[in-house]
Image (cartoon, rainbow, N blue to C red):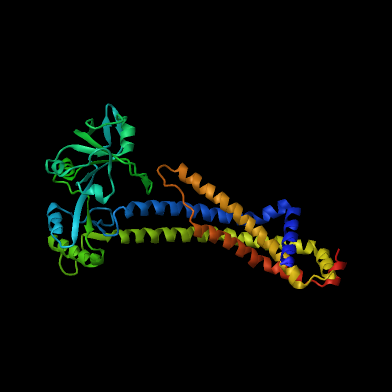
Length: 403
């Protein structure tokens, strides 16, 4: 233990003796670790935001929507008749449609314009999406059945339009349509750069009538299954029911897709993993360069300190002692670079996330910190072993004669 302490103290003394050289030696490690941490923090923050949003639906949810072709055009249609048939399937607890309305550009209030997403939903949507009013109420069955022109808005819409603190009873305009505000939702933040508080929810039948019955709407059915263990069987039943409804037979491809919330989260996880690996591989090259830099500088250091090594060996230091001293020096330089890079990467990720509009906060997972520090330490060991071995093999007599 005493030998280890002395080797550590000697390594620190050597590093402090050449501060600028030590900094430049660790620069490649700093850049590499900072880049990895910044990328991982941004990707992880985005993934966490998406996961939190979809977990609100629960693991027993199904998302059914129309397929698109290679040009983005809708291939199929989901109708009220489909909805009625799916409601009759044993095991589906509740199913709610939603559609996005793109007829007009934004909403207006007393001369103020604001671009917001207008979505047609049914009363069950509030519970399934965890969208609860902070003020007023959500859409009711009576609103839907009566095709009432009422709206539940997000806090972003309320702020941008300059609506009063309690806007219940106020009217906002969407194209030629006047919508009575009946509720303001609790704030939900952002996901995928999209502000979840920038929505205007209206009754689903009202949305269909605004778009006109001749136009094919983009519709999503969100279903909740009563028993998660029957998810696969119920999904297959939904698939067969819709294929019959749409007249699709044999090997013909379905004009709709069905995904569970777990499948959606799994797909998102796979995408973020690929992004992390690709960027991690790219910035990992700088760690390799940093390691080579450490090896080069340590080789120079061994040459400069040849007489010092000779004196140490003459006083009784073994090869293992010399090896440990130089190896510790390389590892400490690399580890310091890793710690500095970690701090810079964290700050960089936080700064980038705050600059990008509606981007979720960055999140640095513990595994990324451990990986970055472990990798930087490993670089120090791998690229420090050759210079350390060279120093350990020096002949004490030749070393003492070195000028």
